[in-house]
Amino acid sequence: MTVSNKLAEALQAGRKVVTAECRASGASNGEAADKLAGALPASLDAVVVADNPDEVRGCALATAAILAGRGLNVVMTMTTRDRNRVALEGDVIGAASLGVGGVLCVSGDHQSLGICPAAASAYDMDSIQLTQAIRRMVDRAEGFDGRRMNSAPKLLLGATAQPYLQPTELNMLRLRKKIASGAQFLLTQAVFDVAGFQQWLSAVTAAGLDKQVKILASVLPLTSADQARRMQAHGTYGPVSEEVVSRIAGAPDARAEGAAICADMAGRLKGLPGLAGIHILCGGCEDLAGQVIQQAGLGRA
Image (spheres, rainbow, N blue to C red):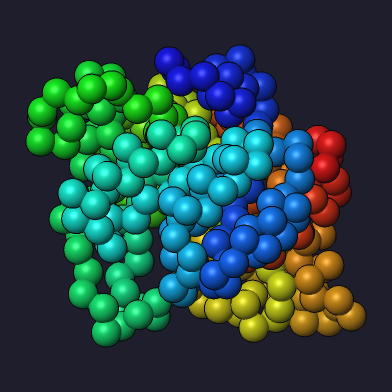
């Protein structure tokens, strides 16, 4: 890794890292960004700024730049759903110039699934093509169209992984493509089924892919029984057990119980061979990250 920042250096050194997601506020004032920065634990190796995953929020680039200006090591998510390659390339250059340390490349859920059904999507590139294009910028100082750039952006590149995608052969093929495209770290989807995740991770390590890319297992603190049931029905996250749903439904404080379950997941995952660390998908509840870190013994919150 030629990039020098807190996350890159920790991954290179082989130290177990802890990162957390944050979501930009919908408020158009600086106080919201200050509150967001204050809610995140100082011990994090990086903060991953989400890019409108659930609703129209503040600009991910602006939020990432504000947080970087407040001394946080920031990874900015870039969703190809919403931008063509001209806008994507411009955002990469802007992010690097504003002190953002990395980029997480995702395609994004289709807008018809809820964020803004009336919107037209871009999908000019998919996440793998975007990763390849940024890798050329970083390594060769070449723009998306091959033209020579004045300087190469210094950015760590990340992508996502889906542990529960079947069949396993297809899963490994897609993982290899993401690694070949230039991804240096992978954030998994939220893990609720540890046994199923271990099967996937065993396949990853058997193929030697954990030696080629740094893998962080994601955990999500659920905040209500309704959210737990939606996750249970979704299927993307593996089996969400009825025990988890019942615990949250019967708890006097659903948020606290969700954080405790999340911490338990993180505690069970953190020592698995082949993992480089834990990523906390805060889901807009950034204040829960510190609780998860403390309860799971992930470091000083």
